[in-house]
Image (tube, rainbow, N blue to C red; front, side, top):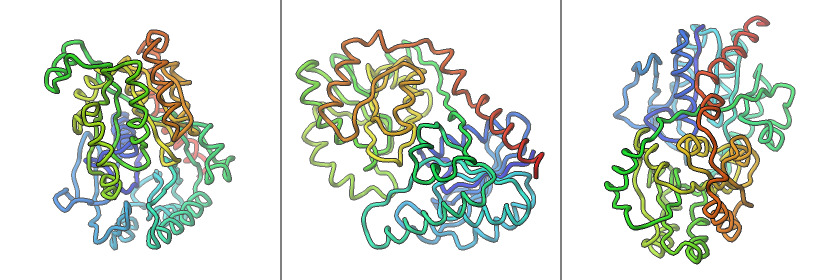
Amino acid sequence: MRILIALTYYRPHISGLTIYVERMAKALAARGHSVTVLTAQFEPGLAERETLDGVTIIRVPVVARISKGVVMPTIGLVAWQLVPQHDVLSIHLPQLDAAGFALRGRLLGKPVVVTYHSDLLLPPSLLNAAAGAAVELSNHLVALQADALVAYTDDFARHSRLLSRYRPKVHTITPPVEIPEPTAETADAFKQQHKLDGRGPFIGVAARLAAEKGVEYLLEALPRIAERYPNATVLHAGPREAIGERAYLARMQPLLEKFSDRYQWVGSLNAEQLAAFFKCCDVHVVASVNSTETFGLVQIEAALCGTPSVASALPGVRMPTHMTGMGRTFPPRDAAALAEAVIEVLDNRGQYVRPRAPIAEMFSPATVALKYEALFERLLEHA
């Protein structure tokens, strides 16, 4: 099967969406499919065409940015060249160019499968308001043309302002998650590298420093946590300066300085380092505040490393702790409730740890690829 995947950002950009698509693409390629990713050349130094892990990546030059979106004048021409060469089109939302991709798939008789990762919420401004309205309209045009819509969980689909209007088209496919199994030795090496001895418990955050991630609520919860655990420290892994988040970083700076003795940024980590990071953490927190977060893949990564999570009780985001049994949820933007949930997990950590193997099987990229493959084949049979 020849599969064309379209999304705005792909590796080396780091986000839950890009990691999801990379794992999906590699797993489909490993099953013998021809997989092409059409994406933005969001940094000038990136190759316009390359093959990685059996996946062909085609990057279209960017001439301008609108907040987190990009403008690619030649994307339509490239799409017209690629869509006829493939059997099925896999579109990943949000992205500004999705409606054009879906229309080409429809006109050329190619099944269109749309995976809806999250809502797009932009910082307030007239330009962003216009861009947001355009994306909202585009999303509905895409949904109308799609043969199938994919959501991570039924919980999110029922609450999504987009997916809830197209429920007959919605299919639920668990997201792909994988991470190396950490060892005591790699965790000890990580502790030594980042001088963690003599402190703890460690509260992990694995996320971009972005407004929707709600890191400020965890920092505001620290004084209450410290009453119970005086040496509690936040370890933050991920990009410090995310695309479109300069203003948020500036707003966060006073809070980061206030809690500098309890907050340590450990940088962007590769898979092995991230596994060691989770192994070092006693609990992991997802404090997301809005529907740009629809699941929180890092909760599963933490679980696979033996670390329970405390997560915002947002639609979809509240599901990983339910599916794995590893953690608690709390009302979004509620620092006091977040503190109590963290304390509960730290006090009774053994009750929130589960065996790795069943979780690994449930979220295996190979398992996810099989589900996408079956969906593609059903659509092709009826094309």
